[in-house]
View 1 (tube, rainbow, N blue to C red):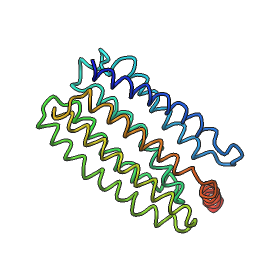
View 2 (cartoon, rainbow, N blue to C red):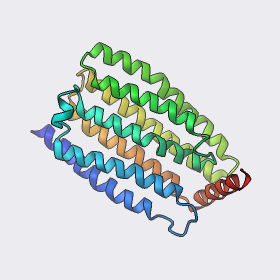
View 3 (cartoon, rainbow, N blue to C red):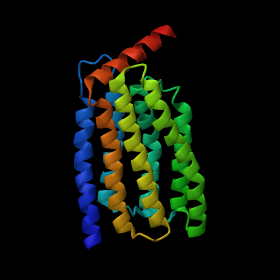
Amino acid sequence: MAGVSLQGLFLSTGLFFTSVGAVCFWNRFPDDDSRFLQRTAGVVLGLCASYQLWMAWTGGIHSYLAMRVVNPALVAHGVLDLLCDAPVVMSLGYIAGRTPLQMLRTTAIIATGHASLMVAAATPSAMRATVLFLIGVPFMTEGTTELTHELPRKAAALGDVNVRRAQMGTDLVAFSWFVVATAEFLAMVHVLPLNFALPCIVACDMVGKMGGCHIIMNKREAVVAANQHALEDSSNT
């Protein structure tokens, strides 16, 4: 019962903060001509809130999903990651002066890694889950390396503030991805009980996604520079 209470507490707290965060980010800097960062942050946190609401109501054991996969809560979180990959990566790229099209390759690499982890969570065999996890790790490593090394360098063309936003944002998001992946794997192979692993996953995931959005949009100067760069790019094409 203590584990269930802890899980419910984390989910309820996460639902509150992500719901409030989605509204706040959606309405941030209302006079901006471009609302790209506001929309992507609102979508990401809205998806997180939907996942937490679903988990709070069903406990992660939806009857339809539970009959078909071994770890329905982890599989559902894998679906959440796949849905959030594009807006998260493209937001990080946007603050560094990169267009969504330019971030497509990195998005695909990271999504492949998350898809491998999701399939691993649905696999009943611990050995097969381990193999699938190990397949996904190189994709995650390659994708996060591109984010943490390339984006700060690209952001130099926009200014020092954008460099710092890009560096801190990519570092936090990459760190949260790997912590979440590690906790999921330990739950898959039954090293960590799911009732303990799931609150850790939800908390770290919320810190990564909400913290990343906050870092990106914390400085108006960085947002204005990114918007201006995007406008110049669109006018040149």
